[in-house]
Length: 240
Image (cartoon, rainbow, N blue to C red):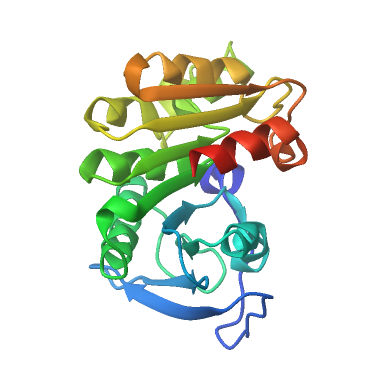
């Protein structure tokens, strides 16, 4: 039952037609185990670069496509994928396979952009995949919105009397990938995040090279509303 407590996908019929305000194309990547992974590739006029976006643990590309559209309006190409069982994507949920899937989409991004122009962006659950991919490659930079030290860390902070290390099947140990990340890193986190504790993100920061990382604290920011804060928007725009 752990998958139902961690992941909140919303399925889409295979013939669902996406509609967005900005130009895009839909595509699929097939994994080694046969899973078909659905993705969207948004293209901006006179592109400033490409953002490879790994989204959170709920919904599907109908929602996440709208969330990333402002990046396209600002002049960036964006690639965003749906994880296994999300939206039109198929396959069986498995932690190692999710990492492999994330890497497949980085390869796709490299086929459409110079690596020096690729920004890897992760949000919430997606910060683990983004950090993993950045540790395996050499993107321009890595941006993490509401990241966590590990899923185990989040679970233990929420349920301190439960032996989570013994029963949790999905660990998502973001901190273990940090040592091999060589690009600049931006972390954005709110002090009133009720899903991923602010302290978990601060613990993750300690694993990064201090000279290569920037941590932006959004006072009063929650898990889903950082976009409403001027400090978030300004720093993100400046970083990009």
